[in-house]
Amino acid sequence: MYSIKVRENILIAHSLPGEVFGPAQNMHGATYLVDAEFFTDKLNKYNIIMDLGIVSTILKEILKTYNYQNLDDVEEFKGIITTTEFLAEDICNKILGKLKNEYIDDYNSLKKIKITLQESNVAWASYEKEVI
Image 1: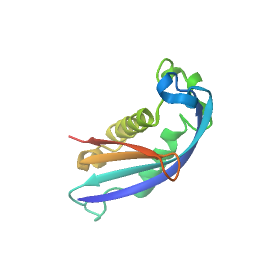
Image 2: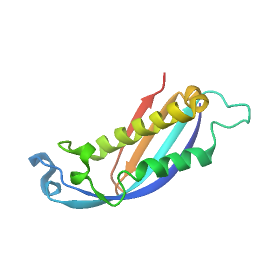
Image 3: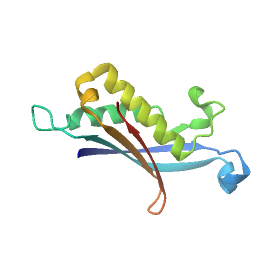
């Protein structure tokens, strides 16, 4: 299987209600390295998975929703606990939606996408989704 990966970063603020989150129940900030990895079992006619420039642009565009935001105040996240795992899935679904709507050939060639949010050198979370 082939893969390509692009990386960006975001800075967010949020609180995570619930005793399970300990001190993170309070408002705090997080700086994430966001990796988007795309998998396929065959290369396209140009011998690539897809254009790195396109997926880099899509990732940057999607991350504007989160970057320098207090996620507690973002309307689409009202009432949602915006954990790292949740954010990885949300970013994944938004990228797939953009690919499906605007780059259908690239979307159709994908087998899997993986989004990883690295919060520190010792903690990260990922979400993987097979594309059918």
